[in-house]
Image 1 (cartoon, rainbow, N blue to C red):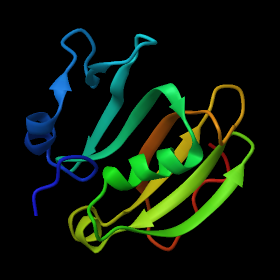
Image 2 (cartoon, one colour):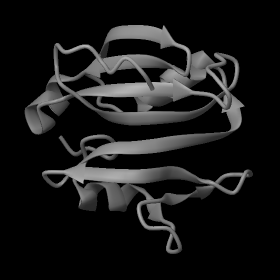
Image 3 (cartoon, helix red, strand yellow):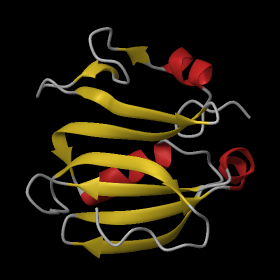
Length: 138
């Protein structure tokens, strides 16, 4: 299965995203607030396992969770979710991604100035160890 987002190889990612030539690790489209849609791209073992998906305008919690689902294969399922003062953490598990990365996906929904479920401005996607609790802070 070819992946285009989290878990993709860099060539797969680059075939589906447009790099911002002025900002390494960042990808267009550029948002109204001047940020790139995708920033802070990180790879391990040749696979994308970290990035930030920025939103402008801000999204509500449900739309942000749908954005997270859109970044993952269709076999991904939510295994845990919890609210913290600075974010909402959602852990998703995917057999497809587990076979390639040996990791689950931690999505952290964040807002400016403390978590506001009606105004999510970014989604931080990173790897987490399957079966382990996510970090206790955002």
